[in-house]
Length: 207
Image (cartoon, rainbow, N blue to C red):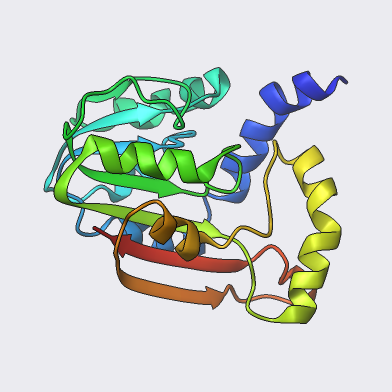
């Protein structure tokens, strides 16, 4: 199997399967709380956030590079009354007007976007002044022993998981992109110590 076929036909299914469990669903619910109006979602995937959009959300603009991911989201999109439009493949270059959205949502996507800083700046351009960015992501752990393993494992992780990085400092990237973090929660997900390079999670809201 070629790497391209793996990335295009296998990785989206593995991501959907691994990130739709009850525990991750609870984190998605907390992350989506407070979204309002027209929402830009970068890294829409299979639409796993749809069930957690609060009533204040009126429409969603989905940015999703994977055709299979968008296809997989069809059943979930069919179960909601919200208009959801796929408006691009690349979160780093949005063909959307300035100040055209009220909120932005990014979950488990900053790890794979080639230039996450550029994507965060694009989201800031598209969201109105005072609008919110909601993020749920995994990334750089606080413990040096875990970080060493993250650095060792990252080349393999990128090769088999669609370019996913383990060592990105999500809050630092958000601040560097010009957002102001208002709420930040970070913790390891429950599980054995061997899983720690993959499960240091960040939930944040920024304006």
